[in-house]
Length: 128
Image (cartoon, rainbow, N blue to C red; front, side, top):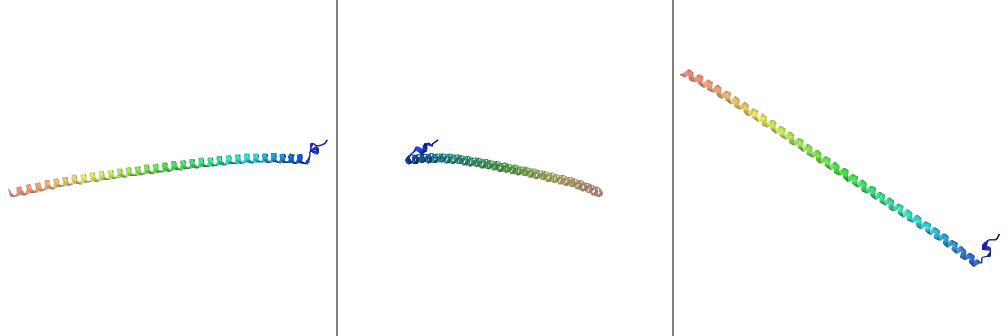
């Protein structure tokens, strides 16, 4: 069996070789382009994923910061309320103590006055 190439001229063989090389080169170029496209798509997807992860992380950090600020504000409000309540209690206690002193002083004054009246009556009886 003879090969078809045995009957081809040198120029036909050169043309066949050039065609084979061109076809092989085209196939390699197509494969490279396809691989490059896939790589570019994968890179784009990776960048998109990283951007989404970064956005999610920033959102989470922002939410956590907001929660922390709100908690601190609530704690500050609670402390302020407790201090106000304590100040009110101290003021009420001071007012009650002042009223007690006032009442005690009035009672003491009334007793001194009554005693002075008794002594005055006693002295008056002595000179009458």
